[in-house]
Image (cartoon, rainbow, N blue to C red; front, top):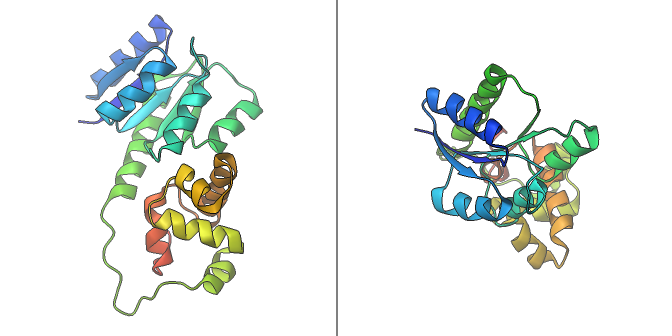
Length: 208
């Protein structure tokens, strides 16, 4: 049974979300404030987070940012009344996996949730060992094949070793925001949405 954390402070909306999700067989947890969301994400380890941006104590972006900074790659679907393109772009840059505006259709939302959960399941599936003929890509091959810059090659190898954005920032003596931007650029150029695929690509496997 998939576990979904709902971060939403409007009773009508979170009750409707719980009802629709539980009818589909999902187990739900509720946080009505940002301060509740992070501890719940750590203790309950949900398979997906539905995140409102207009929370009473802090902006929902801060929840997303802190999740990603501590290396939590749980899929996050932002559900917000904010319809401006800049809001959506900011969400994706911080690591959101999808963005749905309110009011929303329940059928579409449930399908989007299903897509994110299936994608996460594929990304977390064990990667088969590379063939004996496969060899780790050199820095030059990463630059030529994927268009990575030398700095992005360094970041890609750190990501492949499982380092979070905060750990990469400390290792490279840059800000967390700079490390996050580098990591986002690496994922885009490698054509992956999850860090778990990066190590396979470094070993010579094609992106999936």
